Length: 367
Image 1 (spheres, rainbow, N blue to C red):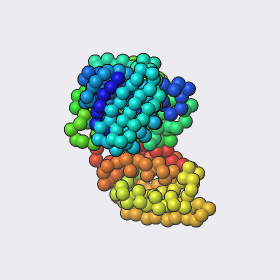
Image 2 (image 1 turned 90 degrees about the vertical axis):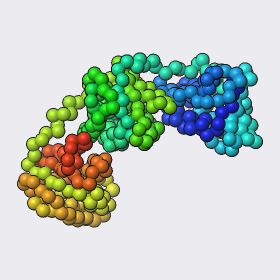
Image 3 (image 1 turned 60 degrees about the vertical axis):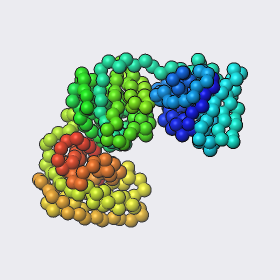
Image 4 (image 1 turned 30 degrees about the horizontal axis):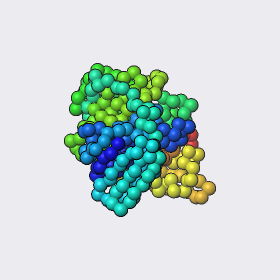
């Protein structure tokens, strides 16, 4: 193998695929990045057997083709720290790669590229297309309520419901449900899959925020593929049946308030200051026709907040983990929100003032 490429281009590729490099493994090859050089250029691949990322072919001056596996962390550090505009990589056939850039030269041990596990094959039959920025926002607005307890594997992922016109993303951790809906550029047959939260968290870091950039999604029985154009992400799916969440989002309510989202966030954050453990010390909401009173009592002291609201229905007293309320409110990109209540020990539902693209259900705590 022998080729020369732009250092910045190589570094960008390493940054993308390194998100799929295994951090804890008994297989040293999974700590590597696969470097494949062909007559067309070079590409990078990483695969931890649950998540795999591969770049598109990038331009290079190729003198000799080849395929090698390089330890990811060392490779990344070298390319990040050298100061030449170009990088040259050459192997000598003795499991050594010679990397040179500017006035720097390195010789590092490599592994055989043939030992590297290939990404699972995903047939590109039924295609679903949406804007990358929409997918990035959907992940941000739901990822916070996946379960951290791996005793229920399906809840450590998110439900993706794909259809002809739209896609829904749902996460549940046993205390709250987050729901987000988005229109598709192109849809297909109805299908539902559970994608690991770790996959969505990593893919969100490489999704574009440009308005016109799209991502194509393809699904098989066991895997999902995201084609971003400059890279592809392949992930295993979580097997199992997701909870039936739709029946939880009832339209019935006895109390509904309309409130400024940012003002309520600020009040809840101030009321939370005296509570170091929000799971054990809730904020108490006292709702009447014109105001909401927020109280918090802890060993460090008390907090009292009041703010004006619009109220439809009866007054109500109810308590919540303030972090759950704040997470949901921060996920909504609207100035005004609606919060529906049915009873002091029943969940509340938070939505934008208009529309149903976002919905958040939160269980209360006993006062």
